[in-house]
Image 1 (cartoon, rainbow, N blue to C red):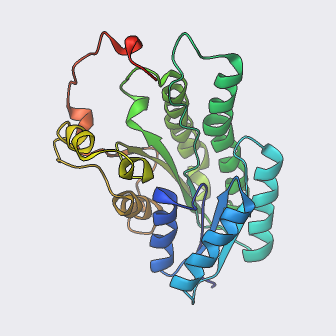
Image 2: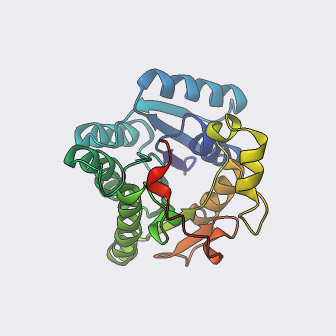
Length: 260
């Protein structure tokens, strides 16, 4: 039997890249995607330099483009002949899209990338996995369950991901395919590096854990859900959010008076 294969979308930096690294550390062959083919190829080369014994594939995949999604999974099947884990990480963040400024175009862009794109990726993954079984991990968000201003479309898309996860877990279980979502809170990214120390500390003070998740923290949780260590976990939401979901945060009645 050949080496197991994982595919992570949106995996050229930050959390997606850390997830790809974790699978490679565990000896899996790894496929990654980006909207930009050059970025995907460069990330695959960096991973190969770090893990020379592992095979990597970097390819372009716009989560809003169903044709690219289907072509990407066909390429994985052709080059590796199998798919054991799929991680839906690519997302449109939809920052600042609120009740009054969300146009049909903005709505469609976020929902097409996050909900529609995730579903059709899972559909294509299931077509490969149905022969040997596998696991899917869909990256969701605390925004699916609680709200802040300016994220109405993003929140709707992440709630949709959790709902489809439960349905697919029920529908695909007989094929040996497990489906779960990871409900993520704040994660350190390049955007955190750009903010001042006061802002960083103010954000951290909101979390019972006292800090945001590192990309490696999310990667460890994803790998647990995807691997043989969680054989009976399916149809569930694993929350990794520094404890923020347990808190009642103050409501800001002046949210719409702030500068964008």
